[in-house]
Amino acid sequence: MTTNAAWFERAQRVIPGGVDSPVRSFRSVGGTPYTVVRGQGAYVEDVEGRRYLDFVQSYGASLLGHAHPTVVEVLRDAVTLGTTFGAPTPGEVLLAELMTERVPGLEQIRLVSSGTEAVMSAVRVARGFTGRDKVLKFDGCYHGHSDGLLVAGGSGVAQLGLPGSAGVTAGAVSDTMVAPYNVVPTLDETVAAVLVEPVAANMNLVAPHAGFLQGLRAECDRVGALLIFDEVITGFRLTYEGAETFFGVTPDLYCFGKVIGGGLPVGAFGGSARVLSALAPQGPVYQAGTLSGNPLATAAGATVLRTVTPGDYAELTQRVAGFSAALTQAVTSAGLHAVVPTQGPLLGLYLATEPTAAPSNIAEARVLCDNGLYAPFFHSMLDQGVALAPGAYEIMFVSLAHTDRDLERCVEAAHVAATVAAKVNA
Image 1 (spheres, rainbow, N blue to C red):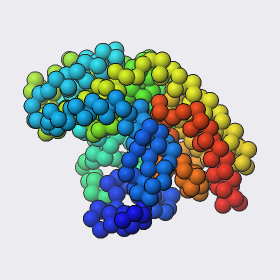
Image 2 (image 1 turned 120 degrees about the vertical axis):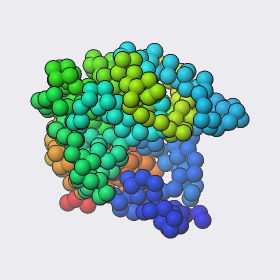
Image 3 (image 1 turned 135 degrees about the vertical axis):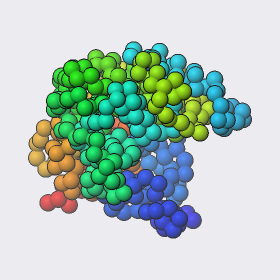
Image 4 (image 1 turned 180 degrees about the vertical axis):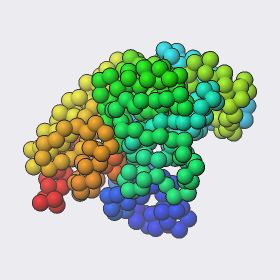
């Protein structure tokens, strides 16, 4: 078993579609997925021994890059003490302290095992705290695969052309309202919460318009609804503190994942002690998890948060800005046009046949994501040893392990890939 094709064939016999997350299937770009056996820094290696410059970085979880030596050392020590206990541990307290010290409005958190769990639980708290049923989300924002929030999702849902999911009943989404991103909706007193990605990163990258998040805060305050920031992607990746400081808007509830686990499965939701008092065992809102606060995940996550500095984020933001400009030029000089929006160190990439503005919502993003350019571009990049996400609705993740030469190599490959995509589209 030494080829990607052989491993994918073997996987399809025992795993539905051969993958444990649909976007990994290459369904939207075609071809056979590569099967990763190891990663180091900015690179991953597949079963055939081929190395790829990796801009997936576990969809943003690997801020320091793969197998960072300090994180590996901490995990080696932690695993000898035991992997799970079903009891309180010092590690969960230490991680919670690190997070609440950084984020001004975050007083308490509850750890879970995934971003989906975090958002699902935050919504339940909002409903329990307000005594209301309705939740408003935005078209194209992905908040995990729980039934009530999968409607009008981005990411893999958009890539597979699904409006939601089979198996989700009308009743499950009857209390979910959907509005266009970057438009402040008018709420009423039936709404428990407004749920938003402060930077939409599941329809590629769509930045919030000036005043959008502030408008949501004001409208929630007007009717007594709670504002929930889904920071599974932006949390401790956008800035040292997160979206609250970056945009100057304080939500009532926060959802985290990815970075706070240091590469291990994790999620968290939190807010003020007053709102979190609704959560069991103090209050009537039930939530539980056998592996919540897992000692390996908390050890890795705390190590990452202690390792990165405000200066690291500032430097990465500056480097990504230059990378964006270089990618734009590389694609344009090859006969296509690129829209490469940034927010802090977050980076998007849309391809087009003519000059176009950055999208402001899913309808505009879909025009660029579904124009047929991404698949040949993706495969040309992969052939050159540069791995992007296998879907046009995802963003690129630049880690602290990516060197200037790595970024230059990606730009050079992008020029070639854009040339290929332009010819395919001609």
